[in-house]
Amino acid sequence: MVIAFFSCEKEGYVSSEDARLVFSKDTIAFDTIFTTIGSTTKRFTVQNHYDETILISSIKLAGGNTSNFRLNINGNAESELYDVEIPANDSIYVFVEVTVDPTGQNLPMIVQDSIIFNTNANLQEVNLLAYGQDFIMIKGENLRTSTTWTADKPYLVYDYVLVDSTATLTIEPGARIHFHNEAGLYVKGTIIADGTLENPIKFLSDKLDDSYKNVPDQWSTVLLFSGSHDNIFDFVTIKNANIGLQVGTIENEGFASVTLTNSKIENMAYAGLFALKSKILGYNNVITNCGYYAAALLVGGEYEFYHTTIANYWNHTTRIRKTPSLVLSNSLKTGGTTYNGDLTKAVFANSIVYGTLSNELDLNDNDENAFNFLFDHCILGIPDTINTSNTEHYVDVLKGKCDALFVNPYRHDFQLDSLASAINLGANEYAIMYPLDILGKSRSKDQAPDLGAYEYFEEEDED
Image (tube, rainbow, N blue to C red; front, side, top):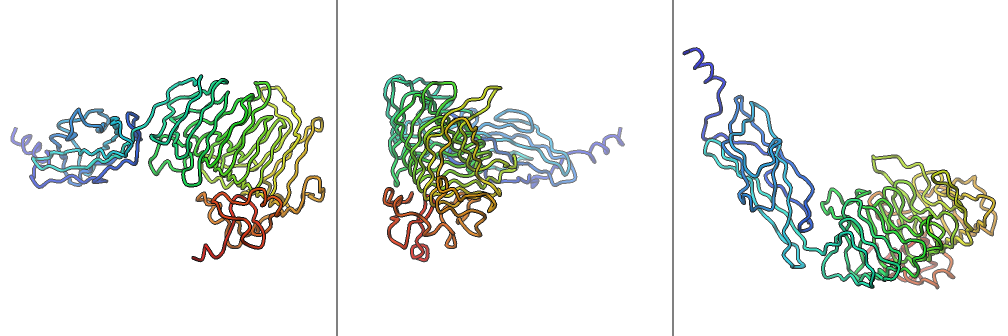
């Protein structure tokens, strides 16, 4: 018995009142989240650096069951847990989530709490901090009458919202529309998203932690059904979805039409702009960094793009892109069925089509339907061997690789570099039509307009 007693003592717990746990983080901070919607999960480790097992008498949220935070302690989903052992030189995980209650205020809220660890009457804390935001919930709504969304509070589309064929959805400058996982905005009627340079409209995911800032495929799409006409997107940012903006549907009769201007569509898992037999007028747009296509214009249609930057520098590790930035086609084969349509017009003027591949342009003509396209004063990321001598399709085109073009495309900065080949290569006739760039800069202040959505001014950069 004596031998057994001393053997147990030797294998016992750390008994010192000075015993201290070691935490991988002393503060767990969440970026802005939405009220009533759970956050992302964060974790930290609780480490025992002693050569004996340590017994934690209790681990608990200071706020108890009323806390906005939730814990999972080494597999136990509890707000408090007692007699937690950590073996010698080992550790346990603690996972933290948070939900912020609505307050009715249109201001970020700070939510705080702490996790208290009691070891041999020695108390230690890990602080918890979150910023919350009140919002307007849109959950499975069918808008049958005309509706206006304002900039007073952000909107959260939890699963979907459908604008009926009889309705118009007007979105005011500065409005923020956030989408939950797989949620989307579907339009059979009309959408007028009319932002301004100072107060753009933003379509984003509902995950606002910095770690999700450039993660694609966080929500579904903005979809304009065929038959939806007179849509407007001006000074709009669409980011981190599967498809940014789909214009037209193959299964519906007719076509969709939209004016897309001064807007950014970036970081989509599949395509930035995906159009089917539709009509689009676009200028001062930046469509970039998508998993398959920056822009795919299929089954014909009528398209005009001026001073537009289409560039694909997709660099996510989820997949390697092998498809071109821009596709023009008068057909589409899907599910064993081929759909054909006349490409009556596809004009790209004072624009850039570029990326990391040797060929960033795919022209797919079925030789049965009309296939009319024109690249006028453009930079095209295509091999030098491609014949561009036909002036019905190519006018003053610069092709091949450029040593410098954008400031930092991998960080979503598609302003022109000081050595960019696109500087002063534009035609004045198009600059007169659209005299200001996407940042409101004049295109007539220097030698000639630049290609793409951004105008470059050396003196401003030096300042």
